[in-house]
Image (cartoon, rainbow, N blue to C red; front, side, top):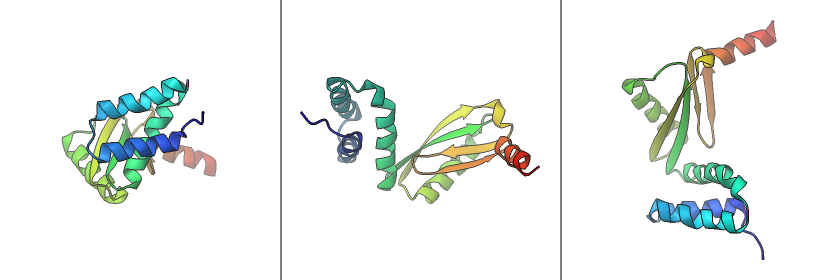
Length: 130
C-alpha cells in the first residue's frame, strides 16, 4: 500500500477546513492516517505543513510571538494587523511565549516568515562583527 505523503495530507486537511468541515473531525481523519501508517512522530510536522497551506492560500497565519515580557492588548492588536498585512491573509492567530533570554524586542514566526527584532539577536550580530 502506498502511504500518503505528509504534504498531501496537509493539503487534504486544509481543503477540508476551508470547506467548513468541523476541525475535530478533520483532526481525527488525519490522525487516523498517521496512526495506521505508524507515523505518529510526524504529527508536529504535519501541523506545520497545514499552517503553511493555510497561510500560503491567504486564509490564516498562525504567528508565534516570542518576547521577554507580556505584550499587552494594544501591542497584540498591532502585531496582528502587521502580520495580516505582511502575510496577506484574512485572519491571524497569535501564540505567545515569554522568554527572558531575548532581553527585549520581538521575534514573530509564521509558517512562511520570521521577523527577529530581539535584542539578543542584535547582540549576537555585534559579537560577530567584533
